[in-house]
Length: 232
Ligand SMILES: C[S@@+](CC[C@H](N)C(=O)[O-])C[C@H]1O[C@@H](n2cnc3c(N)ncnc32)[C@H](O)[C@@H]1O
Image (tube, rainbow, N blue to C red):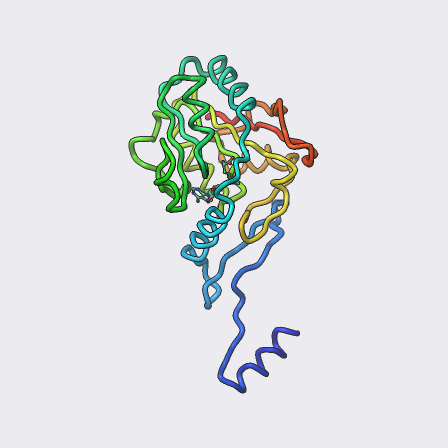
């Protein structure tokens, strides 16, 4: 109603208001923020620009904790064996790949959509919704605390899972801070919804193996978990 009134006033001066984005509560019980161009279609360039701007603004921040990566490195050794190659998605300063390399001694790369990727070792500028052919079926583990930055978590998780070896694991960090979607974090869901969402998105190809408490987390969080996903 308000938008209609504003539009009719604006049109008198030759202008028009257009929706540039909105948070949607999906039927599946999660939230997604949609980026629109002027015609109501998905605007990828807006998504990329939003992520890049936020990355540049928060470039000094490190979310991931070394203690947790040491714990996950031991977990990977116990479940997958000695890994040869791992990928971390959405890595900003690249600390997770640095620490996985330290504790596992294997090749680990990180993806980062922002052009700041070039400033950090073992990091490539890359949108994690896409897959490089050389990753497919040959990645022993994937780690990410950034699935909440996905504009399409179904597409994203399927891309990541296609990279794993048959015994490989995907580790998603999910905390109470991942519940609400907004312009910078376009995917939000409560931890209790994640297993069924993952089962849905996997369409029989992958599912949750277990969910583990993180050994260390910020005191402001209610919970922080690792969701371990494996091919079926
Ligand atoms: C919450 S931050 C986490 C950074 C880092 N993992 C940490 O723990 O400090 C999310 C990061 O993912 C990056 N990102 C967002 N969308 C991405 C995408 N589609 N592909 C790759 N990186 C992305 C952002 O630029 C940002 O640096």
